[in-house]
Amino acid sequence: MKLSLKAVSRYRHLVILVQRRWRAYNLMWECRLELAERQFQRTQEVMLQQADRAHKGLPMMFRRKVALRKMARHINDTLAENKVKPIQHAPDQRAIQHVLMQHIKQRKATHLEKVFIYFEHRCEFLKVLRTTAPIERARALVLGTVDPTMSLEAFARERMHTRLENLEHPRYHPVIPIVEMAQLVHSAEVLHGGSNVEGQQDPCNVNAMLHDLGVH
Image 1 (cartoon, rainbow, N blue to C red):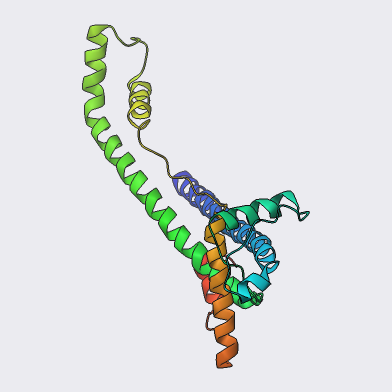
Image 2: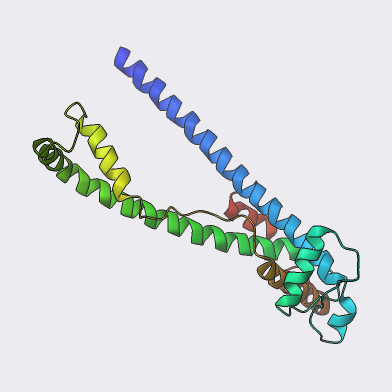
């Protein structure tokens, strides 16, 4: 009876832990999407300020004599250096959400693939270490290169840390590069213009894409 109660308690604890991790995971991607939307709006505002050059088919230019905020000037200078063309019209919210969620979904898949590869290599190291750690520890004790009081577990952890130093840990960069964001702005403008010409609704299913991202 005691064993059953302990098993039920442990199972309940694990369920609560998974629920908390899942909520934190959803919140993390929701915040990353919100950050991308703010970046999009800032980049779009700067690109709209040179709509007359977009009409002429000219790239963005430096605006040294115009008083701009620090972030707006940085965005403008970066786009001008890369000869990015401005936009004539601001896309609607549905087009923005469609483009951003497609991009975030792609970044998410790429990041998760890198994480999976990292843990595959890590598991391979751990599998080899479980076999070789006792032998390496015995050899180190004979040579006197390790503290005799160090346990096998501590020795294995130290060897694991040493072998994983050269294995790069995947990191997700939430800030999208300015030039890449400008490409998303152009994509949203094209999508918005296409939907207006055809007289149809936005082709994206926003709710389905939110579900794929884990944002509810």
